[in-house]
Image (tube, rainbow, N blue to C red; front, side, top):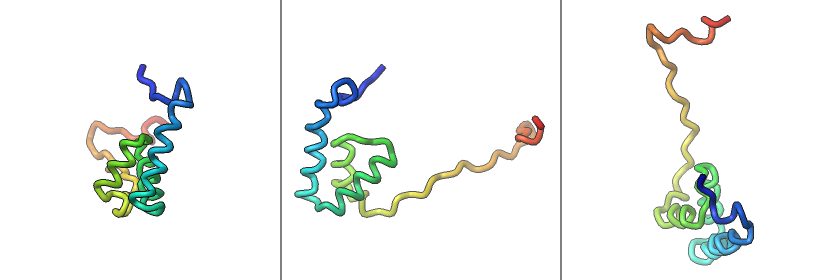
Length: 84
């Protein structure tokens, strides 16, 4: 089982949090907020992820819509109505 540094001892996450907040000095608070929002939506909640989003300018791109997988149409797929 893999654990993140702040899961067992929350105090260990403070340094990462401070690092993320310091990114606002370089990129500005608006960009940091957009990057943090994007990272949270992806489940990538680390300093490294937020910094990477900012470095690559992904915070400036519109957030992708939720992707809905296409409906399966095949002779072997019965669907929910089959089980009623």
